[in-house]
Length: 114
Length: 111
Image 1 (tube, chains in turn orange, blue):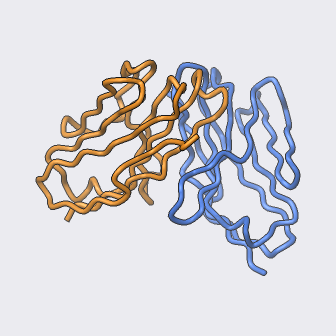
Image 2: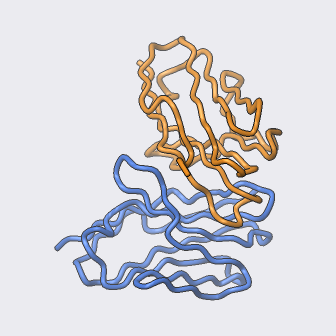
């Protein structure tokens, strides 16, 4: 099992540019979560999906953030336009049947907006 | 919604000592409490978890205790080693919802 795969690992972009982060969950996992990690705020839940359907997006900071899950093996998190305060590590995690077996996190995408 | 508080934010111990990290949660419906370890530059990894029908769980040098009445749970690491140095996160949740994480504890074990 290749685990949860995120791309890119690092992204440096200029303020105002569009950024797209990608995630491939573990096959057979029906939940997918997006978290943002910063020193000040820790691991913040942004949005999560169950069977490709968004369940709770109340953690998405503003309309500049959007997430999709077009199929069971792929999800994207898009920021448009990006701002310096969006700089953080973005983690994707997947789980089977909620979190009965715990989350498996991807390696994360370190985003730097300059 | 759920809110998880974690203390202390930093913890320094000598090798061989014990370390204790404590968390409180707000939602009495939460019934799953995992702990994750994150080494520098890496992803969080599950190290132990406990469900609300159990008061304590042990796995070698690591143990977790849960007090549902008081809504708090703790991670205990005995005989600490330098490789235990990392950031530890507690979390709380229930089936059908996402985990809410504490802000983390940076544990430093000096030899």
